[in-house]
Image (cartoon, rainbow, N blue to C red; front, side, top):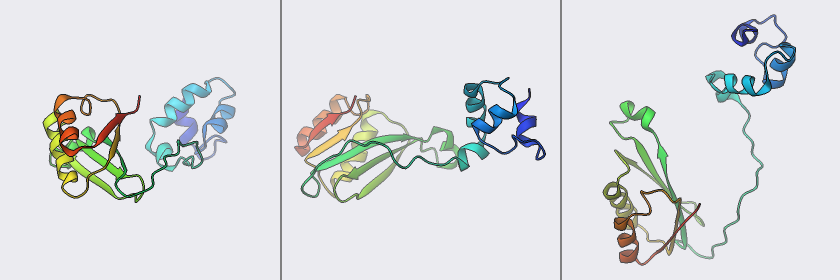
Length: 157
């Protein structure tokens, strides 16, 4: 059964619906997994898919400003031709105040990431910096920066 045809025909009972309705409309001939995979490739489904707002989060307790920041890189490679060649965004947020930075980066090598953090540290310096364990945050230049600024860096797994 052609999912494209079922989904696009307005007379069909499974048209413009979610996974379960399409599964019923195909009489189980197409698995739910295949339907989810097919739908996730469609912009109209992913753009209008309801967002889960309630999920468990690890609580972070801080008692003062600039005590802890969380940072990560956002991969924007698919949009680099529209963004003057910038392929990544370094995002950094103060856990208490929610003050945030987003710095565009052309690549994610050590020098580029360290210079972006130096830009952030000219405004504010955290006591602790939480990042993932990516190579851009676990290199020698980055450790030297943290020692120079006297902040403690820890990485998530």
